[in-house]
Image 1 (cartoon, rainbow, N blue to C red):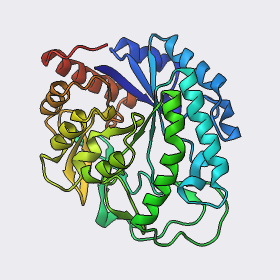
Image 2 (image 1 turned 45 degrees about the vertical axis):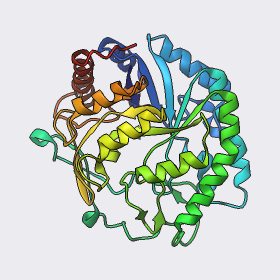
Image 3 (image 1 turned 90 degrees about the horizontal axis):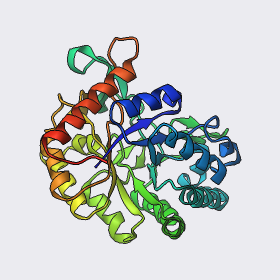
Image 4 (image 1 turned 60 degrees about the horizontal axis):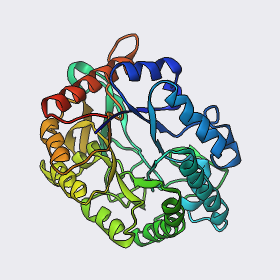
Length: 343
Protein backbone atom coordinates (compact mmCIF):
# COMPACT_ATOMS: atom_id res chain seq x y z
CA UNK A 1 0.00 0.00 0.00
CA UNK A 2 0.90 3.65 -0.25
CA UNK A 3 0.92 5.76 2.91
CA UNK A 4 -0.59 9.06 1.86
CA UNK A 5 -1.52 12.47 3.17
CA UNK A 6 -3.92 15.10 1.89
CA UNK A 7 -2.93 18.74 1.59
CA UNK A 8 -5.22 21.75 1.37
CA UNK A 9 -3.63 24.87 -0.14
CA UNK A 10 -3.28 26.62 3.22
CA UNK A 11 -1.18 23.75 4.64
CA UNK A 12 0.80 23.08 1.48
CA UNK A 13 4.22 24.39 2.52
CA UNK A 14 7.80 23.13 2.12
CA UNK A 15 8.04 22.49 5.86
CA UNK A 16 4.84 20.45 5.89
CA UNK A 17 5.99 18.42 2.90
CA UNK A 18 9.23 17.66 4.74
CA UNK A 19 7.21 16.79 7.84
CA UNK A 20 5.12 14.34 5.80
CA UNK A 21 8.21 12.58 4.52
CA UNK A 22 9.71 12.44 8.01
CA UNK A 23 6.66 10.71 9.56
CA UNK A 24 6.62 8.02 6.89
CA UNK A 25 4.32 9.38 4.18
CA UNK A 26 5.24 8.46 0.60
CA UNK A 27 2.34 9.79 -1.50
CA UNK A 28 0.38 13.04 -1.54
CA UNK A 29 -3.10 14.21 -2.51
CA UNK A 30 -3.79 17.91 -3.02
CA UNK A 31 -7.30 19.23 -2.48
CA UNK A 32 -8.46 21.93 -4.95
CA UNK A 33 -5.15 23.62 -5.75
CA UNK A 34 -5.53 27.40 -5.79
CA UNK A 35 -4.17 30.04 -8.19
CA UNK A 36 -1.00 30.40 -6.16
CA UNK A 37 -0.21 26.72 -6.66
CA UNK A 38 -1.52 26.54 -10.23
CA UNK A 39 -1.61 30.05 -11.77
CA UNK A 40 -3.41 28.77 -14.86
CA UNK A 41 -6.50 28.24 -12.67
CA UNK A 42 -7.59 31.74 -13.57
CA UNK A 43 -7.90 30.59 -17.20
CA UNK A 44 -10.50 27.97 -16.28
CA UNK A 45 -8.23 24.93 -16.45
CA UNK A 46 -4.87 23.62 -15.17
CA UNK A 47 -1.98 23.81 -17.61
CA UNK A 48 0.56 21.07 -18.24
CA UNK A 49 3.39 23.39 -17.21
CA UNK A 50 1.75 24.22 -13.86
CA UNK A 51 0.87 20.61 -13.10
CA UNK A 52 4.35 19.38 -14.00
CA UNK A 53 5.90 22.05 -11.76
CA UNK A 54 3.59 21.03 -8.91
CA UNK A 55 4.53 17.37 -9.30
CA UNK A 56 8.21 18.21 -9.40
CA UNK A 57 7.88 20.36 -6.29
CA UNK A 58 6.29 17.46 -4.40
CA UNK A 59 8.97 15.10 -5.69
CA UNK A 60 11.73 17.45 -4.54
CA UNK A 61 10.68 16.56 -0.99
CA UNK A 62 10.95 12.82 -1.64
CA UNK A 63 7.20 12.34 -2.16
CA UNK A 64 4.94 11.38 -5.07
CA UNK A 65 1.90 13.35 -6.20
CA UNK A 66 -0.70 10.59 -6.44
CA UNK A 67 -3.92 12.58 -6.81
CA UNK A 68 -5.66 15.90 -7.07
CA UNK A 69 -9.05 16.07 -5.40
CA UNK A 70 -11.84 18.21 -6.83
CA UNK A 71 -11.90 20.81 -9.55
CA UNK A 72 -12.19 24.49 -8.76
CA UNK A 73 -15.99 25.13 -8.51
CA UNK A 74 -15.58 27.94 -11.05
CA UNK A 75 -14.10 25.46 -13.53
CA UNK A 76 -17.14 23.19 -13.84
CA UNK A 77 -20.21 24.71 -12.19
CA UNK A 78 -21.97 25.00 -15.55
CA UNK A 79 -21.59 21.23 -16.00
CA UNK A 80 -23.12 20.62 -12.56
CA UNK A 81 -25.97 23.07 -13.15
CA UNK A 82 -26.57 22.03 -16.79
CA UNK A 83 -26.11 25.56 -18.11
CA UNK A 84 -26.74 26.10 -21.85
CA UNK A 85 -23.06 26.92 -22.48
CA UNK A 86 -21.67 24.05 -20.37
CA UNK A 87 -19.66 22.64 -23.28
CA UNK A 88 -17.15 25.49 -22.97
CA UNK A 89 -16.29 24.41 -19.42
CA UNK A 90 -16.43 20.74 -20.39
CA UNK A 91 -13.77 21.28 -23.03
CA UNK A 92 -11.56 23.02 -20.47
CA UNK A 93 -12.05 20.24 -17.93
CA UNK A 94 -11.01 17.73 -20.58
CA UNK A 95 -7.95 19.83 -21.20
CA UNK A 96 -7.12 19.66 -17.48
CA UNK A 97 -7.38 15.85 -17.51
CA UNK A 98 -5.19 15.62 -20.59
CA UNK A 99 -2.62 17.83 -18.88
CA UNK A 100 -2.73 15.76 -15.69
CA UNK A 101 -1.93 12.62 -17.65
CA UNK A 102 0.88 14.33 -19.52
CA UNK A 103 2.28 15.67 -16.24
CA UNK A 104 2.24 12.22 -14.63
CA UNK A 105 -0.53 12.75 -12.06
CA UNK A 106 -2.59 9.54 -12.18
CA UNK A 107 -5.80 10.23 -10.23
CA UNK A 108 -8.47 12.94 -10.25
CA UNK A 109 -10.87 12.67 -7.31
CA UNK A 110 -14.19 14.50 -7.63
CA UNK A 111 -17.61 14.89 -6.07
CA UNK A 112 -20.49 15.19 -8.55
CA UNK A 113 -22.78 17.24 -6.36
CA UNK A 114 -24.25 20.73 -6.23
CA UNK A 115 -24.23 21.18 -2.46
CA UNK A 116 -21.17 18.90 -2.01
CA UNK A 117 -20.07 18.51 1.63
CA UNK A 118 -22.53 20.72 3.50
CA UNK A 119 -24.27 21.25 6.81
CA UNK A 120 -21.47 20.06 9.08
CA UNK A 121 -20.38 22.02 12.13
CA UNK A 122 -17.04 21.98 13.92
CA UNK A 123 -17.74 21.04 17.54
CA UNK A 124 -15.76 19.56 20.49
CA UNK A 125 -17.33 16.09 20.27
CA UNK A 126 -14.30 13.88 19.64
CA UNK A 127 -12.39 12.19 22.46
CA UNK A 128 -11.42 14.59 25.22
CA UNK A 129 -13.29 17.47 23.60
CA UNK A 130 -11.19 17.60 20.42
CA UNK A 131 -12.90 19.60 17.69
CA UNK A 132 -14.08 17.91 14.51
CA UNK A 133 -16.93 17.72 11.97
CA UNK A 134 -20.38 16.97 13.36
CA UNK A 135 -23.58 16.46 11.37
CA UNK A 136 -27.18 16.32 12.56
CA UNK A 137 -30.03 16.48 10.05
CA UNK A 138 -32.30 18.06 12.65
CA UNK A 139 -29.77 20.85 13.30
CA UNK A 140 -29.11 21.60 9.62
CA UNK A 141 -31.11 24.79 9.14
CA UNK A 142 -30.54 24.77 5.37
CA UNK A 143 -31.43 21.12 4.77
CA UNK A 144 -34.82 21.81 3.15
CA UNK A 145 -33.98 25.19 1.63
CA UNK A 146 -33.34 25.28 -2.14
CA UNK A 147 -29.90 26.20 -3.38
CA UNK A 148 -29.64 29.77 -4.67
CA UNK A 149 -28.83 30.14 -8.34
CA UNK A 150 -25.16 30.88 -8.89
CA UNK A 151 -24.24 29.00 -5.72
CA UNK A 152 -22.32 25.71 -6.05
CA UNK A 153 -20.13 23.82 -3.57
CA UNK A 154 -20.65 26.49 -0.92
CA UNK A 155 -19.22 29.03 -3.34
CA UNK A 156 -20.85 31.99 -5.06
CA UNK A 157 -19.64 31.39 -8.61
CA UNK A 158 -21.77 34.02 -10.37
CA UNK A 159 -24.39 36.66 -9.65
CA UNK A 160 -27.90 35.29 -10.11
CA UNK A 161 -31.44 35.68 -8.87
CA UNK A 162 -33.81 33.01 -7.56
CA UNK A 163 -33.06 29.42 -6.67
CA UNK A 164 -32.56 26.06 -8.35
CA UNK A 165 -35.74 24.51 -6.97
CA UNK A 166 -36.18 20.75 -6.97
CA UNK A 167 -33.75 18.67 -9.03
CA UNK A 168 -34.81 15.07 -9.55
CA UNK A 169 -32.68 11.97 -9.41
CA UNK A 170 -33.27 11.44 -13.13
CA UNK A 171 -31.97 14.94 -13.85
CA UNK A 172 -28.84 14.42 -11.76
CA UNK A 173 -28.14 11.14 -13.54
CA UNK A 174 -28.58 12.92 -16.88
CA UNK A 175 -26.00 15.55 -15.88
CA UNK A 176 -23.64 12.83 -14.70
CA UNK A 177 -24.17 10.88 -17.94
CA UNK A 178 -23.16 13.92 -19.97
CA UNK A 179 -20.03 14.39 -17.88
CA UNK A 180 -18.98 10.75 -18.05
CA UNK A 181 -19.56 10.38 -21.79
CA UNK A 182 -17.41 13.45 -22.37
CA UNK A 183 -14.63 12.84 -19.85
CA UNK A 184 -14.02 9.07 -19.88
CA UNK A 185 -12.54 8.79 -23.40
CA UNK A 186 -10.17 11.64 -22.55
CA UNK A 187 -9.25 10.11 -19.17
CA UNK A 188 -8.63 6.71 -20.73
CA UNK A 189 -6.37 8.22 -23.37
CA UNK A 190 -4.50 10.26 -20.75
CA UNK A 191 -4.14 7.35 -18.31
CA UNK A 192 -5.99 9.22 -15.56
CA UNK A 193 -8.43 7.58 -13.14
CA UNK A 194 -11.61 9.56 -12.42
CA UNK A 195 -12.51 8.67 -8.82
CA UNK A 196 -15.91 9.76 -7.54
CA UNK A 197 -16.36 10.55 -3.83
CA UNK A 198 -19.60 9.62 -2.01
CA UNK A 199 -21.96 12.43 -1.11
CA UNK A 200 -21.34 13.63 2.44
CA UNK A 201 -23.74 13.64 4.21
CA UNK A 202 -24.94 10.55 2.30
CA UNK A 203 -28.59 11.59 2.22
CA UNK A 204 -30.72 10.94 -0.90
CA UNK A 205 -31.94 14.55 -1.10
CA UNK A 206 -30.39 17.70 0.33
CA UNK A 207 -31.51 21.27 -0.29
CA UNK A 208 -34.15 19.86 -2.69
CA UNK A 209 -31.42 18.39 -4.91
CA UNK A 210 -31.08 14.63 -5.35
CA UNK A 211 -27.64 13.23 -4.57
CA UNK A 212 -26.12 10.36 -6.52
CA UNK A 213 -23.49 8.44 -4.58
CA UNK A 214 -25.25 7.55 -1.34
CA UNK A 215 -25.02 3.73 -1.33
CA UNK A 216 -23.20 0.74 -2.75
CA UNK A 217 -26.08 0.22 -5.17
CA UNK A 218 -25.81 3.75 -6.56
CA UNK A 219 -22.10 3.28 -7.13
CA UNK A 220 -22.76 -0.01 -8.87
CA UNK A 221 -25.23 1.69 -11.17
CA UNK A 222 -22.58 4.20 -12.25
CA UNK A 223 -19.87 1.55 -12.61
CA UNK A 224 -22.11 -0.72 -14.67
CA UNK A 225 -23.20 2.11 -16.96
CA UNK A 226 -19.59 3.12 -17.55
CA UNK A 227 -17.36 0.03 -17.29
CA UNK A 228 -14.21 1.97 -18.01
CA UNK A 229 -10.81 1.40 -16.39
CA UNK A 230 -10.84 5.15 -15.69
CA UNK A 231 -14.18 5.02 -13.82
CA UNK A 232 -13.18 4.50 -10.20
CA UNK A 233 -14.28 5.01 -6.59
CA UNK A 234 -12.73 7.53 -4.25
CA UNK A 235 -13.48 5.44 -1.21
CA UNK A 236 -14.23 7.70 1.73
CA UNK A 237 -14.44 5.11 4.48
CA UNK A 238 -15.86 7.71 6.84
CA UNK A 239 -18.78 8.52 4.54
CA UNK A 240 -19.61 4.86 3.93
CA UNK A 241 -19.67 4.32 7.70
CA UNK A 242 -22.14 7.24 8.00
CA UNK A 243 -24.64 5.53 5.69
CA UNK A 244 -27.68 4.32 7.70
CA UNK A 245 -27.53 0.66 6.72
CA UNK A 246 -26.07 -1.02 9.79
CA UNK A 247 -22.68 -1.36 11.46
CA UNK A 248 -21.32 -3.90 8.96
CA UNK A 249 -22.15 -1.84 5.87
CA UNK A 250 -18.75 -0.16 5.67
CA UNK A 251 -16.98 -3.54 5.72
CA UNK A 252 -19.35 -4.83 3.02
CA UNK A 253 -18.49 -1.77 0.92
CA UNK A 254 -14.73 -2.26 1.35
CA UNK A 255 -15.04 -5.93 0.40
CA UNK A 256 -17.28 -5.19 -2.58
CA UNK A 257 -15.21 -2.47 -4.23
CA UNK A 258 -11.81 -4.02 -3.53
CA UNK A 259 -12.97 -7.26 -5.14
CA UNK A 260 -13.99 -5.22 -8.18
CA UNK A 261 -10.56 -3.50 -8.11
CA UNK A 262 -12.39 -0.19 -8.33
CA UNK A 263 -10.93 1.82 -5.44
CA UNK A 264 -8.50 4.51 -6.60
CA UNK A 265 -7.58 5.60 -3.07
CA UNK A 266 -9.02 5.59 0.45
CA UNK A 267 -9.95 8.25 2.99
CA UNK A 268 -8.99 6.12 5.99
CA UNK A 269 -10.90 7.95 8.70
CA UNK A 270 -13.22 7.00 11.53
CA UNK A 271 -16.69 8.20 12.54
CA UNK A 272 -19.04 7.58 15.44
CA UNK A 273 -22.73 7.30 14.62
CA UNK A 274 -24.71 7.09 11.40
CA UNK A 275 -27.36 9.22 9.77
CA UNK A 276 -29.25 11.20 10.95
CA UNK A 277 -26.39 12.24 13.25
CA UNK A 278 -22.68 11.44 13.48
CA UNK A 279 -19.32 12.98 14.27
CA UNK A 280 -15.73 12.35 13.31
CA UNK A 281 -13.49 10.73 15.88
CA UNK A 282 -9.81 10.03 16.24
CA UNK A 283 -8.74 7.21 13.96
CA UNK A 284 -8.72 4.68 16.83
CA UNK A 285 -11.89 5.84 18.59
CA UNK A 286 -14.80 5.65 16.14
CA UNK A 287 -17.28 2.87 15.41
CA UNK A 288 -15.17 1.33 12.65
CA UNK A 289 -12.76 -1.44 13.60
CA UNK A 290 -9.79 -0.17 11.61
CA UNK A 291 -7.92 -3.47 11.94
CA UNK A 292 -10.90 -5.32 10.46
CA UNK A 293 -11.15 -2.74 7.67
CA UNK A 294 -7.45 -2.88 6.81
CA UNK A 295 -7.52 -6.67 6.86
CA UNK A 296 -10.17 -6.64 4.14
CA UNK A 297 -8.15 -4.23 2.00
CA UNK A 298 -5.16 -6.53 2.37
CA UNK A 299 -7.10 -9.76 1.73
CA UNK A 300 -8.53 -8.44 -1.53
CA UNK A 301 -5.22 -7.10 -2.82
CA UNK A 302 -5.77 -3.36 -2.56
CA UNK A 303 -2.42 -1.64 -3.03
CA UNK A 304 -3.40 1.99 -3.46
CA UNK A 305 -3.03 5.07 -1.30
CA UNK A 306 -4.66 5.44 2.10
CA UNK A 307 -4.86 8.91 3.64
CA UNK A 308 -6.34 10.18 6.92
CA UNK A 309 -8.16 12.90 4.95
CA UNK A 310 -8.73 15.22 7.93
CA UNK A 311 -8.27 14.83 11.66
CA UNK A 312 -9.78 16.21 14.90
CA UNK A 313 -8.14 19.40 16.16
CA UNK A 314 -6.38 19.38 19.50
CA UNK A 315 -5.75 22.55 21.60
CA UNK A 316 -2.03 22.72 20.79
CA UNK A 317 0.20 25.10 18.88
CA UNK A 318 -0.04 23.12 15.63
CA UNK A 319 -3.32 21.16 15.59
CA UNK A 320 -2.99 19.79 12.05
CA UNK A 321 0.59 18.60 12.56
CA UNK A 322 -0.30 16.94 15.85
CA UNK A 323 -3.42 15.24 14.51
CA UNK A 324 -1.75 14.05 11.34
CA UNK A 325 1.28 12.67 13.19
CA UNK A 326 -1.04 10.69 15.46
CA UNK A 327 -3.08 9.31 12.54
CA UNK A 328 -0.13 8.39 10.33
CA UNK A 329 1.68 6.74 13.25
CA UNK A 330 -1.41 4.66 13.98
CA UNK A 331 -1.83 3.71 10.32
CA UNK A 332 1.80 2.70 9.94
CA UNK A 333 1.60 0.63 13.11
CA UNK A 334 -1.47 -1.20 11.83
CA UNK A 335 0.28 -1.95 8.54
CA UNK A 336 3.29 -3.25 10.45
CA UNK A 337 1.15 -5.46 12.69
CA UNK A 338 -0.83 -6.83 9.73
CA UNK A 339 2.33 -7.36 7.66
CA UNK A 340 1.20 -5.00 4.92
CA UNK A 341 4.20 -3.74 2.95
CA UNK A 342 4.34 -0.01 2.26
CA UNK A 343 5.93 1.60 -0.77
